[in-house]
Each structure stands twice: as structure tokens, then as C-alpha cells.
Amino acid sequence: RLRSNDSTNLFRVPRTGQVILYGVLFIPNPAGSPRREERDNARSLLRIVTRRTSDDGLTFSDPQIVLVPDELDPLDQQFYYLSLHRQDGYHFGLLGDYRIIDQTMDLGLAVSRDGVQWSRPARSPLIPRDPDGFDSMSVYVADNLLDAGDDWLVLYRGGRLPHTAGSRQHQEVTMALARVGKRRLIGLDTAHRGEGRLLTAPFFLTRPQMTLDADVRGSLRAEICDAFGNPAPGYRREDFVPIRGDSRRHLLQWKDRPTDRYQYEPLSLRIE
Image (tube, rainbow, N blue to C red):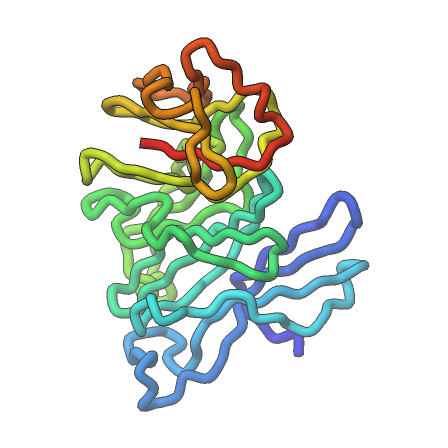
């Protein structure tokens, strides 16, 4: 019942003292299965991520399956570990993204509100591997992010050898540090299209001003809309003071009209 493997992370909830364990569980991957690859070092098993809880750190609950490869994943996709990071009411999962055919390990990203129901809105690696670099075959992240003011520092280990080779011969690895903006773990990139438009989901404005974290390589305009997407008079895109450049806190302004009148109101934002 407590079976797992070495890729296990434990976290303590400060408010309650509860211990949460995210670990890999093996499920059968028999001969003839479309997900089986003979080159894997555990070819008869498939790695998925489970969650367990404990009130004392000694007795743990039964495993609860939280992350499995889905219909958008290739058949050789497996999940090697899940490390937890909390921010802004969200759980960010730093996910070991293992591809058996290529024998590579990437750093994926999963998101959850409660740590149980997870989504993977970004399927590309958080830290791209360099084909000619020290991390050409693998990126393994530490179990937490380091606070550096406006940024997070990501401590990780890079390797040059395929996954299975590491268990048979000495593997030289390199420790490295990556930097990412605290609210830039997930973003919208429209650079490849030249222009883009976005209507946010309705939200409740809790502050008198609105700021935007954006790297604007051109010009950005916005308009305030009601919860159904209808523009507010005086707060249309033609009334907006255009934004340019890279800032974590661009101030949204509509000529001389303040936004505090919409504080504590439900609205949406259309961005171009």
C-alpha cells in the first residue's frame, strides 16, 4: 500500500501541520501495451503521480492518483516526479516530464487550486534543454524555488546522458540556476502572430488600479468590459493610453478617467 520509488517529495502545510506526499506510483505496462518501450529501465511499469496525506508524518493515506498521461500526450510519455510550489492561491507543480523513446527528462509545469485536481496548460518545457549544452538530455529541478524579489530562482541539475545510461555508468552532471519572473511561469505569447487579442474571464476588481505584467514589443491597448464582454463607455480601446516596453507592473490608464469607480465590481478586460 505504501509502495513508491525514489522520486518522492514531501511538503508540510504551515497552517495545519499536515504533511503532503507527491510520489511516483508504478502501474503495470505489460508486453504488447502501446505505451511499453523496451529501452526503458523499468519497461514493465508505467510511472504516474499520486498524492498522500498524513497528520503526523508517520501514517499516510492511501494513494490518490493526480497526474497521468492523457490523450494529448505521446504514448511514450511518463511522469517522473512532482515538486510543489505555492503562489497567489495556486499550486504550481514542477513536473518531471520523461520521454522514453528519446530518453530525455524535461521540466514541465502543472497547475492546481487544491493540489488534487491538476491541469497542464503549458506542455512546453519550463527550462528548454540546450542540444549542445550540459543539459542536452536531462533537467532535474530541486524541490522548491528560491525567492529573489521580483523573480524566482530555479536550481536544477543538467545531464548529457540518456536516462537509462545513468544507471549503468558514471554520469557527470552540472548544477545551474535559472531565473523567471514571479508571475511569468505561465503567459500568453503572441509574438509569432504579430498581433493578438484576449478577453479575460470575468473577475472581481479588488484594487483601485489595474497593472499588467507584460513584455510589449509593439503597442498594447485595453478596454474595460462588463462580465459579459460589453465595453464600458469612456473605457474603450480608443480611450486607452497605449503601453510599450517590458514591465512587471504596467499601469492601465484611460486618459483622465480613474478606474477606482469599478473597484469591487465584476468586469472583464479586453486586450489587443
